[in-house]
Image (tube, rainbow, N blue to C red; front, top):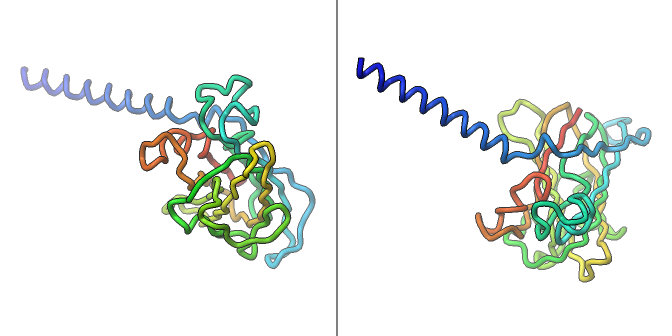
Length: 222
């Protein structure tokens, strides 16, 4: 009887622990509460892959959450955190050409991994900075990156797109970065900034860098 009692207590503790962990992760992941920004489809484009829907997406990056407006006038829970706006939750059409425009209002410093100072995965492997084509920028000029990837083993199309966003010397004047890439079949993808400018934990990838709604998010291809 005593063994049964101990077993019952162990099971109950296990259930409570699993339930607590589930609640913790549910609370820690605000993705479901984020607004969704849907790419705007504007006709079709002739591409090497044939005629495809041409979708457009716009966002901006800011030095803190007081700017940009997407966290409210008071900056929300973390007014000093760097952030992308208007959200980090996006919806893109499947099997389409997607053109992304990012207005970069933040400064920066030397990126720790020069790989992310290069353009990867875009159409022709290029992007434009204020209208001028580029394939990489100096590692000391990176402010943020847009890095989109799939999770291996999910059984969906593999997508990897990474574009550096050059820092601005005047945070009132944006550097405008534009690039295009192709989407495949429907699936869920993730994106984040690979320039470490977080709260100091995890080699400065903590805080805003690992938090959805700030410098990390989700892309749903439908």
